[in-house]
Amino acid sequence: MRRSVLRAVTAVVAAAMLRPLQLLAGPWNKAAFDARAVAEALNGIGATATEASNQIVLKAPEIAENGAIVPLEIASEIPGTQAIYILVDKNPQPLTAVFEFANGAEAFVATRIKMAESSRVRILARAGGKFYATMREVKVTIGGCGA
Image 1: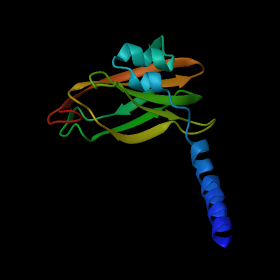
Image 2 (image 1 turned 135 degrees about the vertical axis):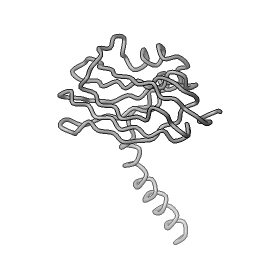
Image 3 (image 1 turned 180 degrees about the horizontal axis):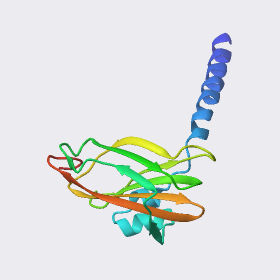
Image 4 (image 1 turned 120 degrees about the vertical axis):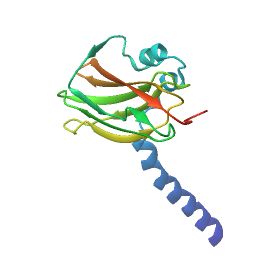
């Protein structure tokens, strides 16, 4: 009897501990992440039109020695930035990452991405219901994802 009660209590405690982790995870935009073309990915995130902006600062290497670890630093100086999207044109799945920001949070991201080959890296910032973009060509010298 004691073992049954102990198992039940352990199961309830484990379920209660996992629930906050599920709440922290945002909704998964499967269609956008599964897209095989940039246009499909942009459509999946709702970016039917983008406006070029010099208020998005992208630090990326001109030449990446290893496509498996391409460092990026992104800062959006656009007031009210709600999200930053990273897309790599020639990756098998162009939408690489999405970062969402709470009201008043500094829109800054430092990360590493995988690149299949030399490609254009697009950064989109969503603010005020609009999408703003900047891009940079990054050359990969040795294999990245799938290479």
